[in-house]
Length: 424
Ligand code: PMP
Image 1: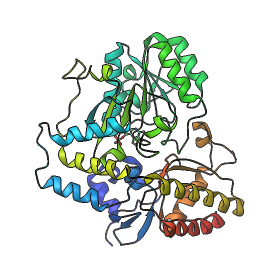
Image 2: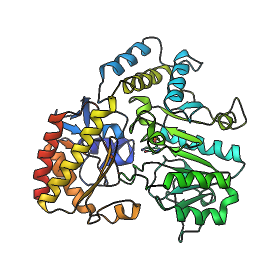
Image 3: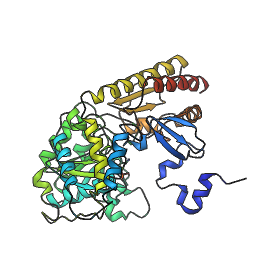
Image 4: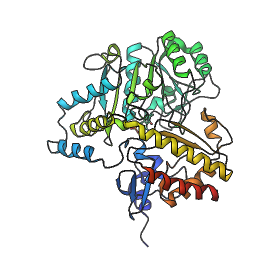
């Protein structure tokens, strides 16, 4: 018998995957190997189709294999893949980002969300001359050392690494507060206020399932940052250009000092970006002293995909149908769960959504997600996967809808969910 693909992969790749969550560790079983994707569907190596709500973890807002994005990549590639010298398309891309998100007066392109947040934090520290940062439990900002940190024992303690290899000496500069709880931030600032360079958060949390900001939470953080001369960094790697062209900051009308972007901005190519106030960005090399660089940053192929993606997104009423389908999907799932007597609730903002197997009526905190019925989620995930619906293989990840999803995809998904809820 031939070895499974994951077993073959695991000979050469740690865990068989190039990013851990792909391994299905959160749900058990072998991951599906994808051979190709088109529109709202991914196809595995046996040609089985799945309606895709992972969308490469967020980037594919236009659906897979969009002809205009594909063509932009082919056209750019025909002129060479990377030059390591400035190009005109980088101006067009930077201008598009600054036009869409007015708080971004200047922007620097990088190759991933991790690079974007890591660099934004270095810049915030270099600009303010302070070392500490505040992050929130359950928010993920990529795998830079200072961000792989959880709260120490007790709220007002210095951070502890969440991964071996992160020195405790680095982690101690990261303080962890509770998402949607301004008091927890107040307390940290009361003790460490003079040393805090920045508060970083996902304005819509998408790495503890999907948790929108509570009323007044983002505004409160803005005020606290003003009072303590700390920078407010919105990590919009996931929600940027996904919840609207102006991103979460436009939706909630709160202006951060710096914003990090990724996923949708690359249209499926490896792109990240960070940008914000001109006076802060001017501290970045070569304009200023804070160092940051990248061999492939802003390369023309990636920029072409990203720019094509941002152009498509600006078509009138682009987001209407995506929002509508997201509403319909979560409402449909809720009523099916209710009919089957399964304790269940949902969150959604724009085209990001979260599904929770819980008795709670409203999920606003990481602790509520962690206390959900994770076993039931696993069973639901596998029933849906067998039926041809690809949900995120973790109860701690948001789902996404693309412009390519249609009524048929939705009714297919709800039919599968009806059977799944009945079997749970
Ligand atoms: N920030 C957020 C909010 C993210 O969701 C992610 C990735 N899921 C990152 C940063 C890191 O991005 P990347 O995986 O591109 O390094």
